[in-house]
Length: 254
Image 1: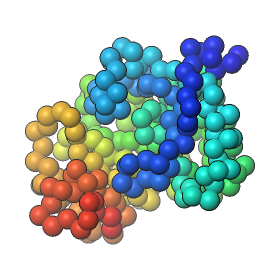
Image 2: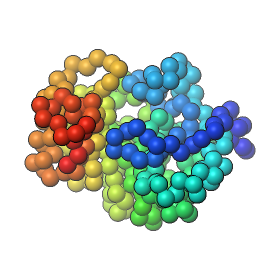
Image 3: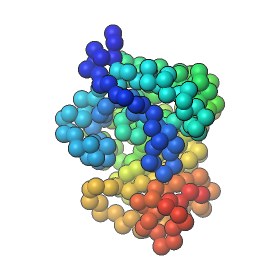
């Protein structure tokens, strides 16, 4: 069955230079996201109605675009991120296997890539990813409280499932990272302690476009203090780092 049969969309371009501070090139091979996170910046920026956004569709010509663009950009690319405006392992991936096809092409072209997902479905590709030393697997974990998760990320896998997946990839020797963005509550320090032995890098970001009761200056200071004390590799995204009294550059990377 073709990807167009899934009401796929067509695009003129797939790979793009991301504006995310720590990123390089990225691609988004789905339009929308079935996880339905209420804080999703991509949906807000694109001004898509919630019920439209959660009915995600594949980019039907993603494979042909990738094969066309990779030879042109190969020497410029340091790392490709999958994905920043959708989840590469949303439920639709079980049917389309589009993410799996894309990472195979990246591997065939010896391109480094980094996955960012909320889903333990990525374990499906464990054997594939654990045999490629130019990939990283990242999970978004915004809270340790699964009741908070259920409110903000209603259709995403549980926190427990994500943590289990992180530990599995770590045990298989795959480089792992955690995106704690947006920080939703005061469990972010407990999260650091809980995952520090299984994660190569933490990325922290604040809740944008919506109100929060958190004191972002205190949050940023506590993260820096804790991560320095533990000797961890971490990044504060610029919106959060800007709340620090002293901020080296647009964001903190230590």
